[in-house]
Length: 308
Ligand code: NAP
Image (cartoon, rainbow, N blue to C red):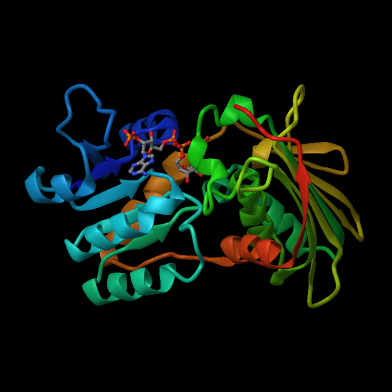
């Protein structure tokens, strides 16, 4: 069977930390080139932009767009027009509505558009979904609090419009939430804290619910020093489920059910390879819509300036 030849576009933190090793570890996919303005990988053809890659580069079947969300739509458009499959890092775009034309183009070209949600591939997410499907859920609480200086050093784009601020990690929690709950979720209230010198929130408190009035509270904070939290606690009629470490660990009634090494990106690439065999797309906008609604409904508070 022929290998899926992939080029990475935007060779920053996530490309180095996750995409390169995941491609190396996944059958059926080969890293063929890199397109990035400033970074390259020794031994691989390098191009400054996706346009140069598509024009002058080696034969490729697909691109993995690891650039910030604000520039990905134009890159995805160029790749799809050139007949390439496209993997989008999360969030799938800087705006919800920009995805519709991309989905239409992918369908017309019979190419895969894969909007990845890496946290959904954390080892405890599917077991949690299964555990919850047997129970009545009473309430959900999310605490997603990390130190932006540790995890996003010098990433100016995250503070620009479309960069999402604290929703950049927070949307990972929402991607898990929308996977494990048995019914759709919507936002009812949001409080957003904006540093006075930035265009994106540094913290957010959300109230969400479902058609059956399930109370869901989420706290996202980029100012967490010391222990970091990526936790979701769910009360049910027969006990509590806790997902921690971003979905790598699951306890149910204090009993450890899952505790595995993180293996999200190989899962993403296996899925991408499978999708490209038939050219179907996988684009679930539910997490991005929740973030957009938090911005629509959010009460804004100005807080102290943020300096990197
Ligand atoms: P990053 O370290 O800033 O890397 C993005 C790269 O894209 C940059 O190194 C830059 O490379 C290129 N780029 C930046 N601005 C550009 C522009 N205006 N035009 C073209 N290229 C540009 O960011 P990252 O952490 O890898 O995040 C990228 C995406 O992955 C984000 O959507 C993020 O949410 C997602 N993600 C990140 C993580 C994480 O832990 N960091 C985890 C999961 C998902 P050149 O300067 O060489 O062009």
